[in-house]
Amino acid sequence: MRKTIYTLIVLAAVLLSAACNDYETYGELKEKERDNIERFISDSGFVVIRESQFHAQGDLTIGDKQFVYLDKSGVYMQIVRKGCGEKIKDGETLSVLCRFVEKSIQDTTMLYNAYYFIFDPDIMNVTRSGSTYSATFVSGVMLNAYGSSVPEGWLVPLQYVNIGRLTKPDDELARVKLIVPHSQGTTQNAKSNVIPYYYDITFQRGR
Image 1 (cartoon, rainbow, N blue to C red):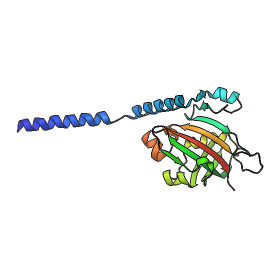
Image 2 (image 1 turned 90 degrees about the vertical axis):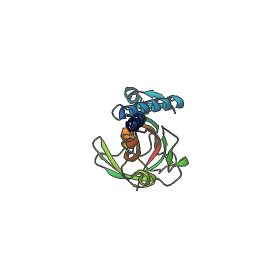
Image 3 (image 1 turned 180 degrees about the vertical axis):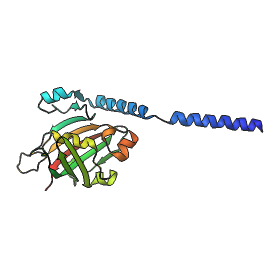
Image 4 (image 1 turned 180 degrees about the horizontal axis):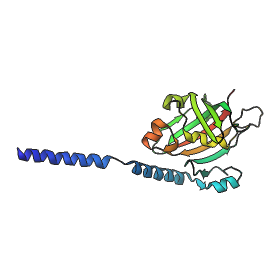
């Protein structure tokens, strides 16, 4: 009997040890996230600049490989096109149409409404108050997948790009590429699972 009890105790200890070894702490998950982002940047051939250089360039990134690292948010941003129209005014609330591709940096998971940027856009209502932007999704793929909360990372570019509509032949919509850490991502997935995402997004002023 004692031998049986001892065997059960040893077995329980082994199982508990295995379970503990499988568990990753938040710190370990953040370190894995940093490694995944660095590997993604390296594999993609991206060049990262500091904010001081970004501002010296007129709040622009140059070429198709340059990203700026934004210290406050931890987001990496490339401004592909500054866009037509004008920036969101202080105190203004407006409808913004978004076409996007979302890719998990951790695996091959993708979500999009904008393969080649032709499908129906997601729509979010955005309000600016001073330097603070807030927004909610009101329709689209992101709303269906993650709920109405807009990832903070999506709002980071709004202070740098124009949100307009195509009214002339040479007009272009604002387009950005982002590497968004989990802390600036979707609540239901990125934040809860410590997963970074890569986004390619266009912004268009709604009617």
